[in-house]
Length: 175
Image 1 (cartoon, rainbow, N blue to C red):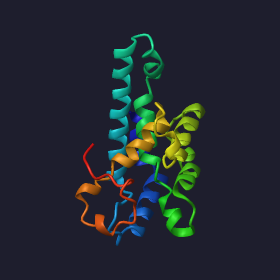
Image 2 (cartoon, rainbow, N blue to C red; image 1 turned 60 degrees about the horizontal axis):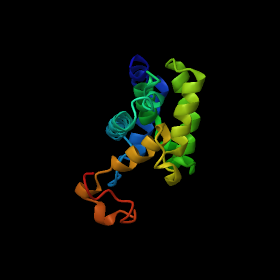
Image 3 (cartoon, rainbow, N blue to C red; image 1 turned 180 degrees about the horizontal axis):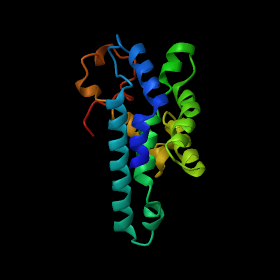
């Protein structure tokens, strides 16, 4: 997980995080801060582990597909940390944050030692983390989509009644 820890120390990552913090200082709704990023990482990791267990139960040979990449945990955490890193651009110039994040992430990933194939996989997950069509995919993109949605504790939010998310979109139960 050295490469993931390098993301946390990366200058561009820290600058972007600070810009988001400044834009969201007065925000009463869900914030796009390090706590959200870590929640997404951990939930996505749990989804990955659940998928591994299910595949093992169904067919031990089939499980090799998902367990083949020894770096899957690193890819999950890298995607989780970077999926909203361009959020400040949405505030600044209206660029959808999944697009802004996908423009920022490759530079950070490259500086932290990820190879081109890993960068493309992570970037696809970043681009798709708001794409409902991929929510049932058993891959990094699908896990990121679900983890991002499950990370929001609407059931405990003091501002839930004021939130413009539809009732279907809100996370009104723990799981």
